Image (cartoon, rainbow, N blue to C red; front, side, top):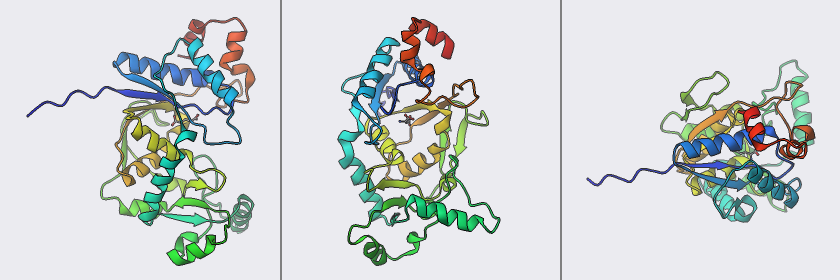
Length: 295
Ligand code: GLU
């Protein structure tokens, strides 16, 4: 039998141009770059610019500038998610045809009020790993015809994945291979727990695709074999694995690296200007110093 050629590892760094990159992004980009170099792999850069209200061209330009200053190289052309909305729409359509998504019509305010009312009895309402309450609406229980009637006439709605129904369809347990360190520092097969997220949003009237949906579509399309990213996205991997299984997409390896924390002990954020790569550079410090500091 012919021996298949070895698969060349493909890594990606996938920032969102909604602010300046901080030192945590530098760590993530450097870890991706170094792992790709060590394994003879490729490094791709993907611009995750689906949030049209917060993403700006000047932040995208700053990403290129900061990464080049760090001495990193990546393949051209750079993929920009906003150029591929049709692909995410097709993936959503496929899940819809499988009867696994439903239109949800509660506004953020209505969700907040419903959760507050439920909690008035003293019982805490379940929250997802990011601290947001699970969706309290019951539209998933409506028939297909009732769901259609609900959104007829253009009522704003988000398409949500019926996670319990989707999990019920799985023939085999859902896991991922972790080579980094999750919260418990455990590598190896990790049992995915998508139900902890409740019925995640896959698209909204004002945002045609969610992060979860577009990230799995793009990782598959770009042939990503190694997803290397911060530990803040560790729990999201459960949803990504579920979507990959439902859409018949290949399973990459996952490596979640540690997060850099600010002086207040919280993870760095883009609004935290003084921990930016650009600010570090403007202070006259070198890329080698930055690398030594974050690694
Ligand atoms: N775009 C995401 C972010 O900037 C990262 C996505 C990923 O690595 O999966 O946080």
